[in-house]
Image 1 (cartoon, rainbow, N blue to C red):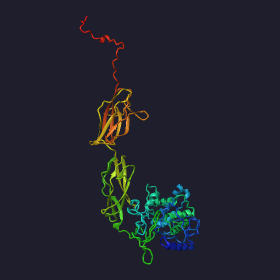
Image 2: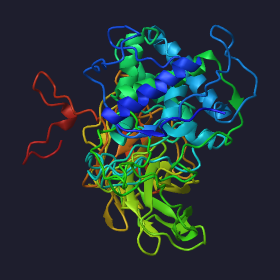
Image 3: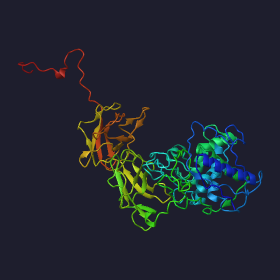
Length: 572
């Protein structure tokens, strides 16, 4: 059985004394070393904490401090690939262990000089969340329910107002540390990673969180094979001697060897339980993890006798437990480019009894290859359900890009399946198109048509702006096919082009075509313009030679055939 020392440590003189006794007992028993290695690199020095890096985000809030078993799993220098055996308390759940090792490999591929050991991630994961509540994660490595630190509202802890609109911690008023490695949202926004390649950066996913922690520990030019750099890295998580000693104890323990246990069978730290929320709602120092960027707590009240409160937060009742989010009657999502969707997305949160659940944080996210967005240009919006359990997303506006995309509604910070909605944006349309004048369009063979072709498109009698138009020189209006002779357009290189695409009407619905050129063949030709929506107009183009003018006699003597007979002179 593992020897159990202080379950919860607080920063201060009492904390240091308790930790010192625990470390002394471990050292005397032959357990893995837990001596403090200071910034000077002296492994015997235990009285000073090395200063953190300038960029370090310090913590110093409560954390779990179960110490390693007195009987180490193996002797130093031997294999760390031990069989699946031993107690659940000292083992590492399979998915959690895999995430730590994967993070080590990933970081080694991009920052080999850091020399990140997976055992350091395991030590921090043990102290922060008891290895994700003993490995209670799904097949993708996501915790079944979020691991949340206390509300940072200044009552017993520092005041940190919301930085993520509740997207990660479900609290749009104050921040809370999130996930098995306990990142506060503002830190996750900088360091979050996609460790399992699912396209998301989820602090509640052990693969994502472990990789983020690894990169955080490797910040700057740290070499974690050096004791001083390793200490600085750990202290950047929580700037506390006691925290460093506890992490160091588990780090040395895991370096000597460990064993894999099935997911969900690991020991759960006292007070953590199987629920998601450890918010005490008061200054009572109930256990809660402390992660990168976690603020310094202020002292809280204690129970009579000087001991801190150890009462865990009561488990939520079925009527208070979120079971699912579902579509609350949203209809078809369709709009024309540039217009607002008439339908509003609405979801409902249900509790374990099937009833409505209020105050549930729901994040609506626009996904896919689209420029559509919610009102204000936002791609993601987080709102809370009302008393009836429903919440409606802001107005969704179509961009100019036609096609299909997806909107997801997710219970913020939960691993519940999202509600997915398909949406379609149709290109702007016109149901009529006509010339703006009726001038005859003519040109001599080989010349440019003097007049420009201008058309105007409308939809239901109103101006149709931004409508796509295709212009084609055709052989016949009844069975239009591209003509390979006659008038043409010219491209940038001066080459002949008889079909133009990508044309669009302006804000007033009009479109002026580029210059049109005649070839050397006279005749009457047809130009067909077609809009998105099927409106068409056929325009006639004529290529004809000019008629020659009469040439006068150079001598100035009229031609005899044209000389008028003198008046008054009788004919012979």
